[in-house]
Length: 136
Image 1 (cartoon, helix red, strand yellow):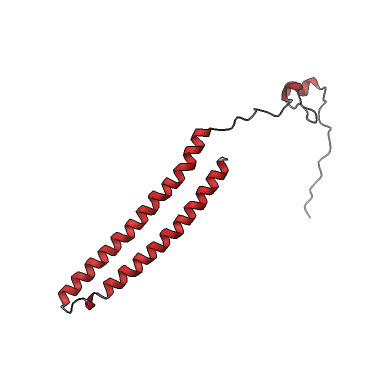
Image 2 (tube, rainbow, N blue to C red):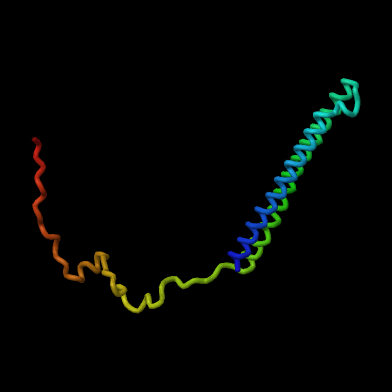
């Protein structure tokens, strides 16, 4: 259940990111087009300069607002699975496999602790001659 909620949230954030990216591009395109064509409104050079500057500033504020709203909505989308995970809590798993305490060591394993090695009556490792390395 929790994985499904997180997966749905990731999908929703991806979809929301695409929408926000589209709005960002639209605001950027329209804002820069209006700022470049400020001379259509008036022919006075001073007014064109100020109007272009104001439209550029409004464009930048719009782009910042799109990024801010995108982040806020993405956090709200991710808050839902975080709340679900918090409410459901962690699943309780057993500490070890079933039958762990039935016998030590478990079948198929050997006790390699110092106490276990002493109890198994294991002798020293067999001596073998090391290969000689000669220089030619």
